[in-house]
Amino acid sequence: MLTGAAVADPPAARSRRWLDAACWTATLALLLIFVRLLWRHGVDWPLHDDFTQILAIPGYLVQLDARGKVGLLFELSPEHRIATLRIAGWLFAQLPGGLDFRWLIALGNAMLLATGAYVAGWAPRALRAAIAVLAALLLTSVTHYGAQFWATGALQHFGVSFYALTALAFLAGVRPRHAFAAAFALLAAFTSANGLLAFAAAALLLALRGRQRAAAAWLAAGVILCAAYFVGYETPPGRPGILRLVGDDPVALASFVLGTCGAIAHAFPASMILGALVVAAWVAIIATGAWRRIPPALAGAALFGALSCAMIAVGRANLGVEAVGLSRYRVYSASLVLSTIVAVAWVAPRARALWLVGGSTVGAALLYVLALPVFMPYLVELSMSQRALRDHFAATGHARYDGYSDEFGDFTLHRAEEIGAYRGTQKAQPARSFTPGMPDRGVLSEPLRFDVLETTRIFSVSGWIAGAHRDVDVWLEGGGRAYRARIGSSRFWRGPTRAPGTGFHGTLRTEGVAPGRYRLGFGDGAIAWTQREIVVE
Image 1 (cartoon, helix red, strand yellow):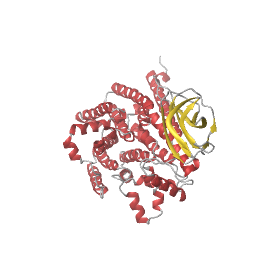
Image 2: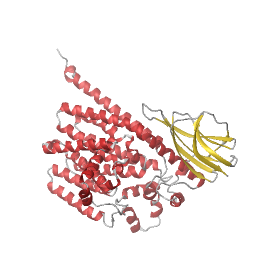
Image 3: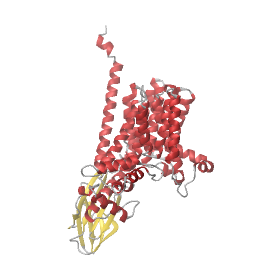
Image 4: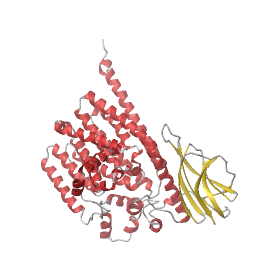
């Protein structure tokens, strides 16, 4: 005879609880790995558009009246109105110590995780733990490093997704909160141009809930805002319009759209296949009427992701395949793929839904692992370069800036320091000195990537070298003399079939080094000599 406990707690229920516990544990482990990566490789130093969209904003605002401040915050740049980024930069500049780009990066990535939590929360209750693992694999993968470790990228692309889905969440309640939803939809629109699509997603959600008049009002509001949004916008020279793109080569454009929808798959052919599967899944859901069983908020989230991918594809199609699959845009693909899997899980029979989620998790885990050897070298190289540039600026008052002239970058940084908006150089490591040494005659044959920024009597190096090295030394050799200096290093994994890598960075003084021409080398014991020469006057 079965006891009451046995009846209430059958083996299937216990197994499910153990499986859920394992899924939540795996999700937590992935989040901890993600936080560790951000802490280890995030650098308090502006990158790319950070200079104009965040760092320079406090200096501009102090010179403007109230009307000028509003105009600056909401002006086009170049086809986006990124007021939320500029406001975040200004607000963080008011904190004690001023701007810290690591906190801006953390804020953007927190919004990324919240986006995944929304989609997982709209999954069937029995599958939420498994969907949480899938979301963590898709969204914390280093394939997104182009936005994950860049303040402007994180606040824009992760931010707009978060604001749009938050708007949907406010409309998905028993009593839709239109005021709060409208506020977040506006935040999305004034974060990135594709944020305007939040209004279309909201209209779809309301229409699926039978609130046709409210849906029409949201759609009309989106159209009106869109018309006003692009006032003053001029199409850049050489960029064809949508009609021309469709007319010239519709097949190529369609392939770009599919590739962008599946961009999380890395390689463009695989991305096209994944994008085609996503489209086929939604065509089947719509054609069979199964959409009625999908939460309206989930359908809105999928529409936002799909339209965002289409907008990216159309806007960047003339720049080629690589431009539509950039790392910073893959969050829209990841969100769309995740929403699609959850949608299919709602309409498929339970057994098939379990197989779908399980197989998708295995595939996402494979993509997660494959991304490490592909993108970690670039990520480490970026992190090391930023540290070297920060240290070089702290030592010399000058640096080099990707996309901007040295004069503009130096002026912007000095101005931010003068008004107390940024003091990141206080975290810089002091320049190191060389000491005479005798180099090992062994020669490293491992792959090496490096960069050098040279100023009178001081130069900075950054890059990575294959192999797990405890320390990395910079060597100068020439004229029968040799000098060395130990610099900062950071080891990282490059995949199961390749040797680990070691990133390095350092700013070095040549005081005490005899004048002459020296070849540059890096190593730990044995040395990898380069063709680069350092001239000491």
